[in-house]
Length: 130
Image 1 (cartoon, rainbow, N blue to C red):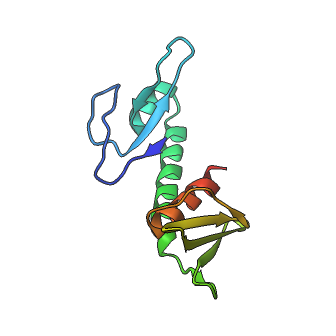
Image 2: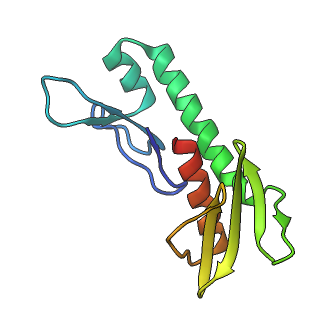
């Protein structure tokens, strides 16, 4: 299930309802393509509405946590970098080489991000995906 941005909505490929924010990707062994549907259609097609609602709730919570993550209280190091603990892993974002570099658990990332917030969100995505 992939959260969309607030103004980027999808349509249900089963019932045609528009403006679905969280898309459930369903697959079946007899079909080679996935079906992108909303919560209710997902529950009906899988015969498990409770599981579909729980999956949607989990995705909504993760999306809200991601949105709040850059706004959390970050500490500033003596070198001017910003650092915080996320799921017991140290995340550090520092200005470097014309952009922002990211360290997770002491390991330096290779990408240079255009903004501090982009680096913070990349860290959140990396840690919560594992």
